[in-house]
Image (cartoon, rainbow, N blue to C red; front, top):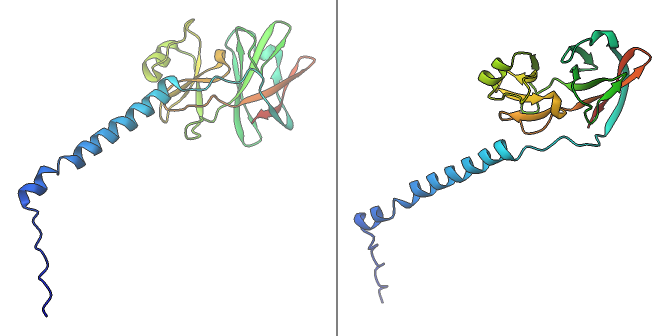
Length: 188
């Protein structure tokens, strides 16, 4: 007895070509789905900084005196351990900031939450508008990351307002002793 011969494949080249369109259409559909979700997250899905931040206690580091911040938006950079940080005099009290004799201060880490590049204090609203695609309502300085052009607003407690960074800048806990300002903790 001989076994029957295997049935030859009946798929023709024409039949195969009829279905080749599925792969590129699926790839394009997948790309646009990914792109839409990423765009939504960058533009609309950024978290708002907590109104009750929790700080990890750290060493006490002197930042400066209250006289170092005579005008609105004056800032001073310092190192808090291995974290580059900045203290900014802002217009209104901020969650996690302090108020001393009517002067409102907020301490922020300068490490971008996207890829940890160092954020610079951008005083010019025009530069913030053109380079970082963010113009604050009342034309005040922002912190900008030059690596991927993320912008963070100190008037919004360090919220990411433009660019690929999603999370707000970690806040530095400040404490006043007389006229001296100290950094005493880091958010997180």
